[in-house]
Amino acid sequence: MTTKGFTIIETLIAVAILMIAIVGPLTIANRGLIAAVTAREQITANYLAQDAMEYIKNIRDGSLIEGDIDEGALYWTADFNENGVECSETTNKRCTVDTITGAQTECSSSTTCGQLYFDSEQRFTHVNTGNPTLYKRFYTVVMKETATGIQDEARVQVTVVWKSGKITNTTSIKSNLYNVYR
Image 1 (cartoon, rainbow, N blue to C red):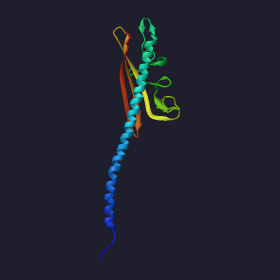
Image 2 (tube, one colour; image 1 turned 60 degrees about the horizontal axis):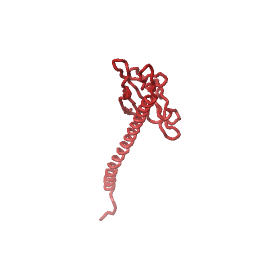
Image 3 (cartoon, rainbow, N blue to C red; image 1 turned 60 degrees about the vertical axis):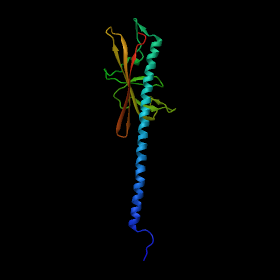
Image 4 (cartoon, rainbow, N blue to C red; image 1 turned 45 degrees about the vertical axis):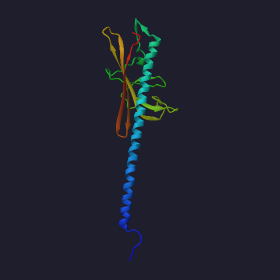
């Protein structure tokens, strides 16, 4: 007597082989998507840090061009810290700079301080427009003085912090800016 069709065992073995063949590529595709999202977040954070660093360099260049002179010393960093706020690692103060509006603010201990939002044109801004992003951005400036008390160098650090799920990520850019007119 011959039987036609598959037995239940043959069917289960065929389904198991099919599942093994499908799970491998799906796992690889999932890991690839996670890696792509992580890379996008890291690239965005690096661009945000570079954006703020370039803005701070522009502030320095503007001060040099204006030639802010007081008592014979060129205050080339006068505009780094608007409203007399000193954003420095030594004072444990961080500041934010909005590269669209030009606003500089001292960061308090508020959890939203440094938070970046999307504006109506999908640009990053510190102005709370109701659409928060993953990112927070801060900067600090540490001045170095010569023996005569003249500030010739500023060490600037821009830090961008963001969360991916439960993981907190950070990227920083450091640059030394010099008084090129001294």
